[in-house]
Amino acid sequence: MTNDLNQLDLRLSGRYPGQLISDRELVDFSIEKGDLATSQGLGNLAQAIVNRLCTRKGELAALGHPDYGSRLYQLVGELNNTRTRALAELYIRECLVAEPRVEEIIKILFDSPSWDYYNRNTLNVTLIVKPVAEETPLTLSLSLNL
Image (tube, rainbow, N blue to C red; front, top):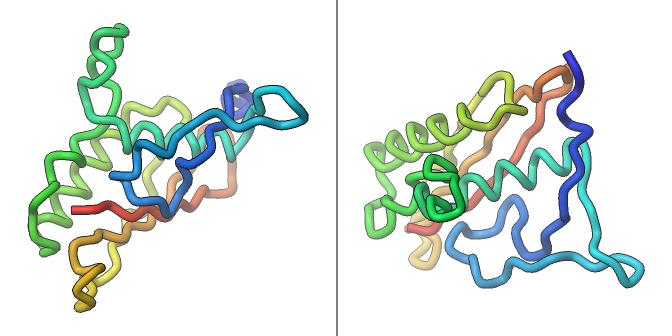
């Protein structure tokens, strides 16, 4: 099996692990030495996973990708409770199964809800996945704004 992590893609700025999923307006292309920057390897896979999770499922239907994205946006307005975290895990698993470079979802971990007024509606999640043809797992942290 060939290593699919050798794929090359444009590197995006403003969308990174740990960024709130609702911060969509900050995404742009990265520039390096006066040209568009590229991403490869585990960095490319991490970017692809974040993009897939941050894109609303069905949003790219007009471009021929009706199943691309996640349903995490459906959790906006929900309380940060056990039910919401269970739905978030379901939506994340559903989304990651569609990523061909992910061989296995090892863990999806949620931080306990914050009692802080400004952070109580934020789901902090850590994803650990095994990339195809790689021994080292990839760990990502995301903050999902409810």
